[in-house]
Image (cartoon, rainbow, N blue to C red; front, side, top):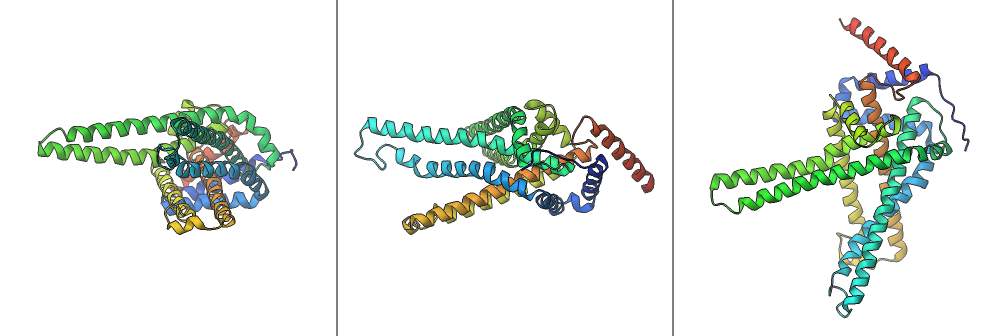
Length: 351
């Protein structure tokens, strides 16, 4: 792997921006299927142009992160129930139960922290690689590794703020819905009960919307801002909100599509792993369990990489829509001027 990163000329980069923006402005780009087709085509183009780089990222960064995630999920589903007092260890004394509980919780916490840290590497690497591929830069895996230390702090801050905002918003909505439902039981006024139940339903729907659509979309664009612009944390979220102006519907469609897709994948994984199947599946041979587990981890890791590339390209789409270059300094000013001139010519032709 060479560490030298050669790039195309600015004109080549501009042509990429113009071509992608022209696709984006078509009627097809305004629909869910059309938007996904355009972005999937861009992902396919990136795969063809830098397949070796993306394979290295997959097997050295994404796959280990997903392996840690699946191991933690397995521990949560199998180990935690055994830690309940007198559930599976009726003869164990209190000290033994407490020790087992501490060990189990320690393992879960350690794996959760490891997954969090590995995820930061994945987000930084894929956003950096996808952006440079789109710009026409020839980037090696060694170049990505060299760039990670400079990106790590920004992605750490943005990811922490994302977690804080996500769980904070969900906690507020959940508490409000619970209190509303509680007060509905304290009255006998029929119309008031109906209003309270409808309010609770609305809050629960808001809970689902915020957790599966709004925050994931804003966070994904904020990750792109963190990678290519000199800001992170709340500033990155503020910039992401500005980039999503006039594009909220498309972002929500993409986030909804991703949310449904990942849930279908998770359901399939549960079925394959036997968590929801008959008890006879627990008696299959160890090598079969390892094979099925390996397939599940690989499926999830591929999905994670494709999803991150999708949102990285969506961030680029937002930049194009607002006539901003991917690199806000240097040649980016030249690119912005050229794009604005093309817009003026297009408007004149339409008039």
